[in-house]
Image (cartoon, rainbow, N blue to C red):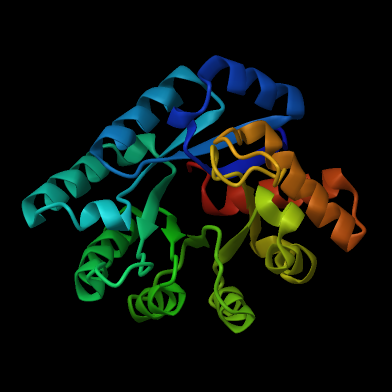
Length: 253
């Protein structure tokens, strides 16, 4: 496949379908990784991947949603991910979220452990959500000796970002890099061989004045442009390296 721009994490079922694909194509975005968060969106990710060649399915279980499910329901969902393993490129969106006091930390760790072990069984990358649970996610992934990990929109301390890099994992530069000093530091200082770009569409629009949920894969170019500008690199060289990262970690063999 020819080198192209990649949106490693979005929720394409919430974007405008054919119109969003057309705008992504025009911008040079050739790979759009849409994330599942439950049974319904996992199924939608498979349909979208079948419908649009640019879209790649990821199947996952959002941590807060998982807390509302029984053990049997979780096992059914994990079995479905296993069944469709050949049709997906990663396990995501998964992880832990400690934003609220009621979010049952021990239960989340129990569920995330099952997810990590499934990803290892299937030899799939994990795309990890870690809001207010950055250290806990890293410690669990280290304990389970996870190797293929993308930390999505990671907002932990710089020392934890460096720990992620030391583990050989990947971090993302989201489109909100346009207004975030933390993500600008990622874009400038972290190894380019361990970065991806994402929109998290329809969230995290690069223009802070936009209040509606209108981000989309075409805007991932803002992240690539930030990396190129901050490193003094050609935009196409950034594109080619991140495409090589994808080929190494996510491309079907």
